[in-house]
Image (cartoon, rainbow, N blue to C red; front, side):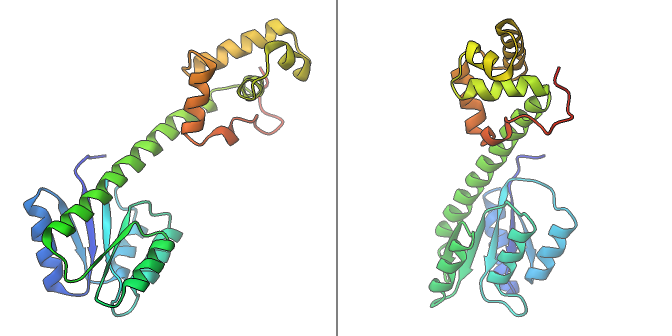
Length: 219
């Protein structure tokens, strides 16, 4: 994945598409334009590259409206921040779009600097989301390396249970608990329980620490 941000602009007005593309290019931001929401959705369906950026989406267009396109993007699992572009009097629609998942909105006619500031804020949000997903994926990969028993022990460790309590709960010896606990901590690359809890909670994976379904290895 490249760090070069990409803005996807959807507007049925060719003049606006060209002017925004030139403006963004002047500050080093790539921009790909679409004359309709359906064109953008076709790109999404083909598996657009996962790059940081945002979508500038006009709210009033022939065919699919910006609101309808936004709803379809969310259904398809698109995580790029969406900035709705509205005309005068469309602010209530833009507010409704934000409640439906849009990141922000900007009203036409807009000043160049306002557009750039809004786009840059959305791109920063995109970078943060990508970094968060990468961290979550890394922690998830480490969790997948744990055996069933290690996950059982780890889940109880995160609940604040002591080794003796864990041994009683799982009907195993304290020494066995210590071995599984040490192995789990090494696999999770955590030196302390506090560090382990911080990693798991920061990645929103605390609910997935529970052991896998019966039948998995309990080594």
